[in-house]
Length: 227
Image (tube, rainbow, N blue to C red):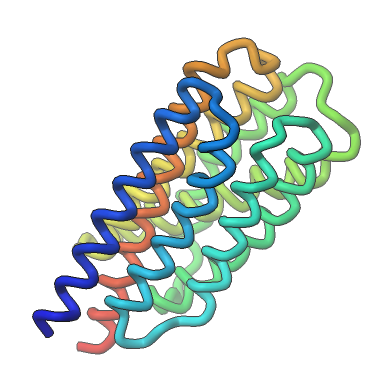
């Protein structure tokens, strides 16, 4: 056990080191460092999960690998790469929702529907007010809005219905993901990349914090299900 804890602490330190370097690299738009460290964020989380988890859920590992691919596709900062990033991230988000439903053992979906509605209203308001959306991305963006709203709705309803440690962490993760999607949406479609030096580091900070929180949620949920 001491050896396992030491390895986990090393991986955790590595994650926050990589995370900090990546945010700094985004601040200065230094592409060589971004190309190296951006994919390392989900990779270090996979290593942390494999080291700490007793169950080794394949779904979590796959969705983190998809996150790695998404991070790579976001680097070029073109509409084409953004489209492919959204496609991969859509699959990723579907797996996230599937994993939450399994871990939280959700049976009553009425609270989920009620909690999802406000998020749908906000994101679709943004969608319909956004000028010059690329036609190739319309369906993907609609699906993304639905999926992030469902993710946030599940997290909020589970927290309200059962306020325990795992659901508190899940809600934090969901809210960070909501802010991340909002930040990316504003950067790409409202400001046309005018404030990259501010918004890209902000998005990367939200991204790292959201995924770390989700990792902690998965670990706590697995422990609770074992008990």
